[in-house]
Image 1 (cartoon, rainbow, N blue to C red):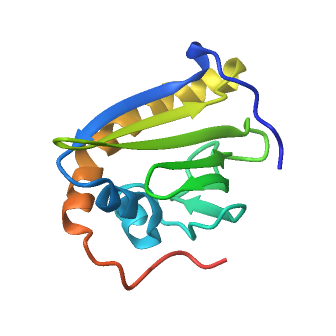
Image 2 (image 1 turned 135 degrees about the vertical axis):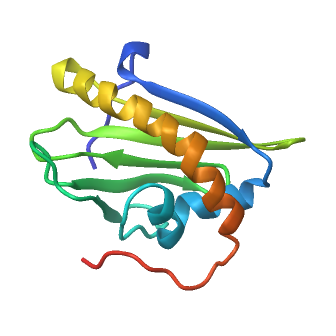
Length: 157
């Protein structure tokens, strides 16, 4: 496992959202493969420390559609950290999810760090708004409907 350096603010995408659901319910949407696929991308995610997984999307010009990841830290239902690499020639970055129980539900914080150099700036310009849209528009409906803990559907491999 490669160590990732401490990020500088300009190298980080940060989003914070409050959901009117308990952390355990938000956690499921972040860690159940079928629910994760509903709001983010098809995947073969398993919430096991050290496991490697992929997100897969339709390839586009200049991108294979595959994001390689590895779970670096997992503390249910408070914190999830995984690496994120959108191609062999792209920087290996880090995605950190922090869930905090608050009186109105859950405060979810996303930090996507390690977005360095010109490639990092390009990734930040693309993923920054994308993460925001997913967290504000897609994730809430998945959390609301995602009470089923059975029937994991994901990509194979």
